[in-house]
Image 1 (cartoon, rainbow, N blue to C red):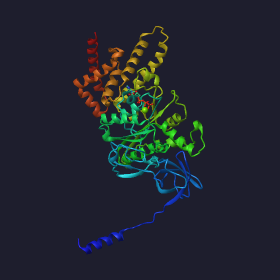
Image 2 (image 1 turned 120 degrees about the vertical axis):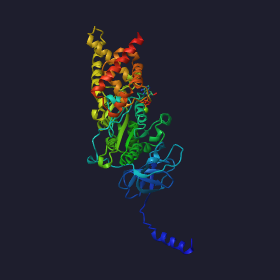
Image 3 (image 1 turned 60 degrees about the horizontal axis):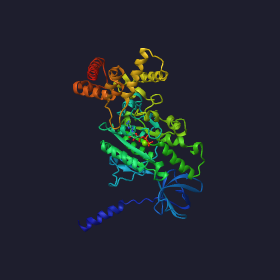
Image 4 (image 1 turned 90 degrees about the vertical axis):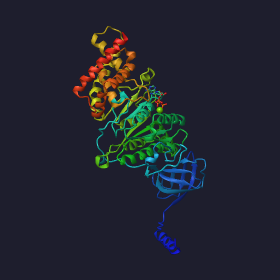
Length: 503
Ligand code: ATP
Ligand code: MG
């Protein structure tokens, strides 16, 4: 390059350099303790603004008072000292978004914590943003198959819905959410697992399973473990949903699991008490409802004009001794579109997934089911409800008439058929065929304790001999009348063979 050219390029570059003055406010730490710093002298600070401290610590502004700003520290709590300089960055916390996140583990600030390379961001999204307004939404009508027979049949989940998973500790809450993620393989749904306040070892085990079952190419994790600061735990679900919003705006479907919101509420309570906000019921601050409502309202199914993307949320809440009427559970139940209630007695008696059919509902209901499943699920609920009622009476041991005996036998078999081990999701057509055979009474040919192998045997039999039926259900999502006959015939034949083998 000639000297003249070089000079011209330089001149151009300098001419194009547009150094706008940036206003920056600095203040000083007045008081610090318990991961809260009171900073004086900051002006024009906004709620949720990121504050940088001279020592390298980071905090967010949560209390905006007249003469000081209350910052909760996210990292470097031990470094900050009185009189230190603090700088308002002028921006609220933002996280990287895009396909570069898939397969990764990040903290709530979007920094990688899996020891791999830096994250390639397509854009940055602020973690707090308003929920889509009514006119941008469309009704929830597309099923999100979880592959769990009892969920898909009785508490169906639609894309864009919020379904709470609630139950005592160790009742299989996480297991349902992880199975739902694993079942999205090949279904063009991105999944986010947001772990809040859990042991790092449990999250490692979950990551291992996600990898083992091939879920990592479409899944990523946002983690604030029990050892992270309360501020990071508080931010985690908002940053997860911000990452989800990017995909939703691209017209994609996203599934977000918040595991769990009880610990999230506790982290927020810690922050609020440290900031000296007045405690209310169960020592939670007054705005704890808004904490979760503004998060869950961001799940939506967007209208066609906006690309029909969706965010489906599966928040998890832990109860104490099955009490769903305490503060956080009632709040979250009222915000979501239904709940899957897991019962520890059922779990311990071997009914897994331990779904309490009476207390579990989905307010979206049948519109989020394929016709083939809707056709049989009404009957299933009815049979189970009758069984529960009669089982209570039958305990008294008086002699029972034939029809009561039949109903009891059918109910016991249905409960067996709904048992399902972890990591073995059913496809939609398998669910439909199995439920069809079950509600039409074909299970009665097998003993109660054989039902598990009978069900698996029946599906294998269909695949080997009548794969056309399954293929057709998969394609149309329906069981038309003519096919009902075929299904009845093959179920009858299989049940006969089964009975003969047993004899
Ligand atoms: P925590 O309260 O500790 O978060 P949790 O309610 O999330 O517990 P999980 O960790 O999902 O419960 O499950 C508890 C145990 O039950 C695990 O060991 C899991 O493997 C087992 N489990 C869960 N679901 C099933 C199932 N369908 N079949 C067999 N075992 C299961
Ligand atoms: Mg769990």
